[in-house]
Length: 416
Image: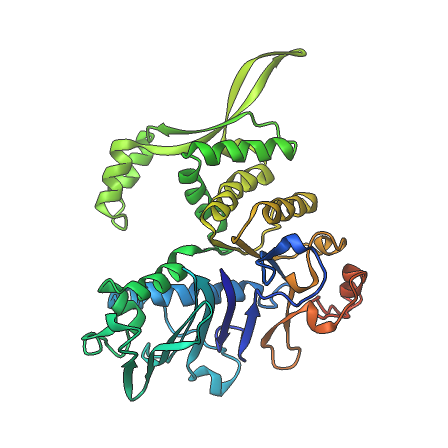
């Protein structure tokens, strides 16, 4: 369960930025809460180029550094990405911190990384329920020290840690029990879909998930409730056409094992089944190729298995631009379905769809976040609606459009 994520000097975010899934002790939509303290859903809104996608990318950067820290070759793919519009920030380090609850403990993990990839600071804390918070290890420019009673798994590993490798990742590599909990939560339980690879990544994950009968059945059930006419979904193997197989054989960038699998086993495609009619009588079924469906239908078929799996696994699902190809009413229904069915799962998304704000029964006031770009210095700022002390009956949409909360485009008259 995610509690907080904090970062500094990453892309358009220059200053220390805190995102929280803690509730604000307001009397809104109690079913949206986990253990009466933490939020199941958060929506991030803002104008184009305000920094919403960079907020998602900060999560990706954070998890990628941890995942690839012990592999020098993969490290090269994640260069320094500071705020570029300030001379001092260009050479300053980037900071990340996460606070979460897993395996009956609260964990807090942070690190600071410089432009060369060296780790300047790294700390891990644990707070078991009904006990005091304790440090597991601390690292600075002078070195690493660890709690010999609570973090015995670190013994003998300090000398094995390069200055550009995270100590957490190193200890996890040697099967440390606590480090494994932290590492796997960050790299496996936080599932991120950013806008650049949204459709391809969702399709790839969903295709695998739809092979599970329980997830497919639940997906079809929801599609039916949302008034879609799809009667079944199948994953079918298809032989690759000759002209494509020749391209695969000649592709020098494609790993040999992937080439072999594609050429031997073919490719998997999604087929949807619809009723076939003769006048007003049902005569059977007809298959549709996935590309024949509307963009909205494809988006739903891709996203529903992800959401169902998130609930089942009690994961955190983060999606950039949720509203792409989806109607406002569908988004509202997805939020309602998620909050009704989630026990500990969490759903965080960015959107341009302001209409989800028009009814107070869709989102709690503390589930609404805004990203705004500073008009003078051009850095992004993230803040919660709750900071404005708005009343429960306040028309949030009207207030936003009037500019009361920022986070909308400032447009001069374009004239002719």
